[in-house]
Length: 66
Image (cartoon, rainbow, N blue to C red):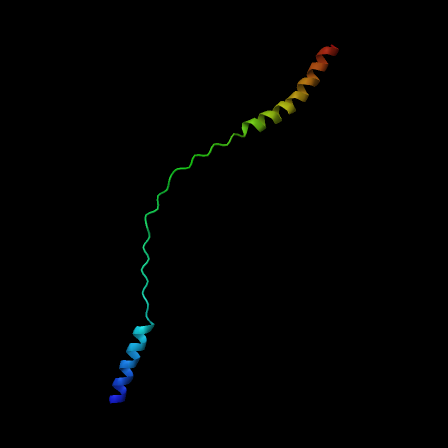
């Protein structure tokens, strides 16, 4: 019976030594607004000018021939 009691105590000590506890604290996260402005109109305007420029030149040539 003494051996059983010693075995239970030793098992309890071993089990207590194997358990760990970790506490992690998380600070509140502050989210700030982000303002992003992208100007793509310049590139589109240049592309449209070159596209319609060709049409305008062809139309101008037709008017000159008339």
